[in-house]
Image (cartoon, rainbow, N blue to C red):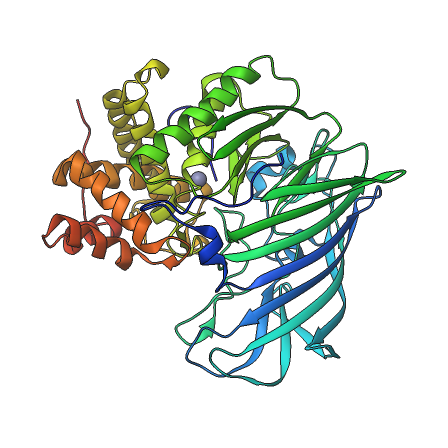
Length: 493
Ligand SMILES: [Zn+2]
């Protein structure tokens, strides 16, 4: 995600990525992944009927008695404790007054048999599905779920606004299983409280035909009905599925190697320039990080309370953002396709890992693209000094500041504290690391990290392991001193 008050004022194409030397091959990778088959109908009263089938293989070394699914929509329901919007953003998110959504599960089947299910979590945000028999390692099971989603009027990742209908995190997504348990962290208004495994998606989506649809994956076919259009969409090796609809969308496209970049916009005189920022970001990151393995990237202007948001193959750019900031958000969200999309991490627990690296990726972008006129030394200096000012102010108010970055989203006291510790200090950490090891080595680290952990989930230890392997020196204590809040950052002149 991109928060705006940081610093800066801070088709339908071929299906598969290439399998050439050193490039990621999503067709091959997809063969071992879980698959969601979804039949979705969006109705004109802002409800969605969903039938989904998940083919799930137990890749753990543990017998599984149940599967747990996140129901992120529950955060948007009336009376939810873990609300999706902080109080400072409430009027911006809900210009027409607070509105509520929900998801109602009507039926669950396991391997074709009706099954009991129940809910847990503070806001009933976890769906527990008992399996008929324990699932052994390497065994597979099919879980079918029927549900209705009620979409609220809110300018958020999930919700409809004046111009767009944003459909993300709306369906039951199976929780990641690691360290002997399902990871069930709840929603939080700070950050991106999501974590999921790369999977395959085969989606049939029917919508009123007045809408144009941007989505994760490849829209292979569109069938026109009397009042609706039905899209057949396929997405391989992605960790989520999202779509955005609007009556107002215009579409501009450009091909970058094997990827079609699509810009879905409304009210944008600078659409060509903004599409170019996405194209330049994709070209730059393909070159310096390793090639983007998918055949589409959709940049979508949307009614969104924050600056932008990343989903696989699809990014939101808030319609409230203007000028150079708009391009900056495009670059930031595009970088997330590498650091979130292809390489996954638990953004609830290690937000600095993807947000810090993504913010620093924008610095690398501006270094590689001087025509954007951003002086990156000045940018780092301003970021550094803004961080120092923030700490001083915070100390004045609270007496003491926790500068550790290894906190869960719900452990940051305020939204600005979260932003400064993960985006701002995260960017400074990666800049400092780049200085310490040298830029060539630093880029080698990112190449190796990308290649080694593509389509997997990582923790900071994985990143540090790659740093030490490439740089052939112990750097764990140095990085941890930043993360644990032991490094003192002083003003740069
Ligand atoms: Zn972000």
